[in-house]
Length: 324
Image 1 (cartoon, one colour):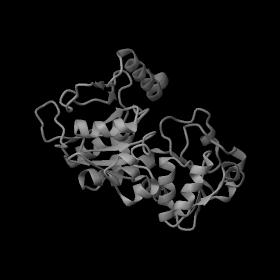
Image 2 (cartoon, rainbow, N blue to C red):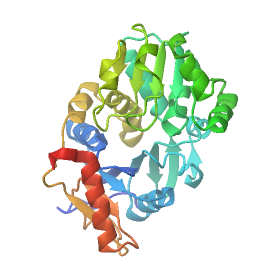
Image 3 (cartoon, rainbow, N blue to C red):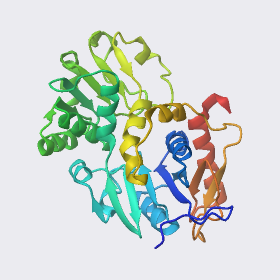
Image 4 (cartoon, rainbow, N blue to C red):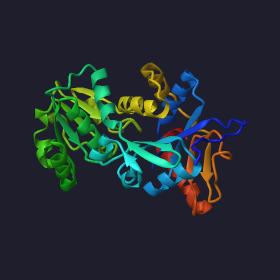
């Protein structure tokens, strides 16, 4: 299979990339990668694709010929068994966030660990010997835990799913706490990383000390409660994590070095909440000729118009809230 994408404008050499997730319209990955493509004169375009299953992610990459992709919630673990091969980190973590398509052969990588360490080092934190608590043992949490371990930190992991967190700790050498134990002793940690749903804070304000650092993986929306803003310590939001995990993904996509300043500018750009360009992937889709430059594609195969419209309305509500 030719893994190049054909877009309007008679540009047969253009490559197509996307981030897959559900929800996905909120993602700022396209702003990051498209800014880099423009700077480096890379003949490529990056968009968002909403699907309902991990298998659909892989079907679309192969069937429509994407050159590569990123994967976010909730598919990072779902796609692991569908790859043709895996990098060592992706296999150890059990999650994929970057996929390269070479003639229909999909290779899965994981750059999230590099993302958390790059972010913390950019913030001036020295990681060796630091006591780190990873709250959340999903794809992002497991990746971050391994990245911190590789950087020399003393890492413990916890999750509501005790068996999942415990098994990962045994496999990687992390420490393990039940969530209750971790929260009770949270003041003993230098760095606490939250890889949990937006607005979920399992600890209380009075447990946090000024010399701690809290990292929230989420960047989708500001805290509605003001809880993070009220903490007496350093708080780092997730857009930096998004930027630094993209550094190695960009290298995998293009072979080039990413420019952090360009990425930081790109991540601050908003798409139009009044008229986002959203197109539907249909049952008869062969390639991307008919889609062009869109803010989001929705996998509408096998769905009726009413269901598709409801999905789009929900995406707009999550991404734009009261701006609409």
